[in-house]
Amino acid sequence: MKHYSPLKAVPEMLHCPKGRVIAVRSIFSIFMLGRPSPDRQARQPPRRDSRWIFSLLALLLLLVLSGCYWLKYGRLMRTHIDLLLSMAKKMSDLLEDHQAITPPMMSEFSYPLERARDFARIAGQRYAERQSLQAFSHFLDAYAELLKETDRLRVLNGDLTDFREQVTALREQGAQVK
Image 1: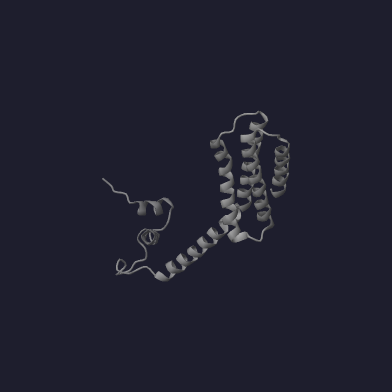
Image 2: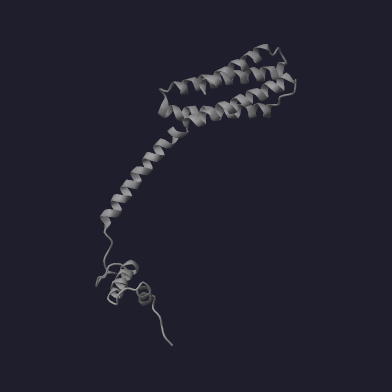
């Protein structure tokens, strides 16, 4: 029975001279086992390269994390505006159809305002000078006034003329802030 070695068969299949078998074996051993060294297992890997790479990765991570909110700022603001406008439409539809608005429903309308105010507070820590953030804060104040008017109309069933004007003004203001 004849035993075949892949290290011998490959050079023969490629029609390499017999002296090339040693070269293939040494290349194979370098790739598989590393450079030949009498104390290869006792040596520690060099630390300088790993410290440099670690420092570079840490710096890159800090840069990415610090810029992350900046990348999402506009999208988050538009999301809050769209949500508040849809809540204003829902309030308008309920009042126009003379449906009862319960206190839990008022909580449903006020919760997005709280979340949007949190966003404005967090964004204000970094971007207080932005005009878009100031316009967004005015938009939130207009929504809060609309919420007060809805609560008043929920209890009193009054005239909806002022409410309709506030909803129209809120929509226009939301379109400008976007």
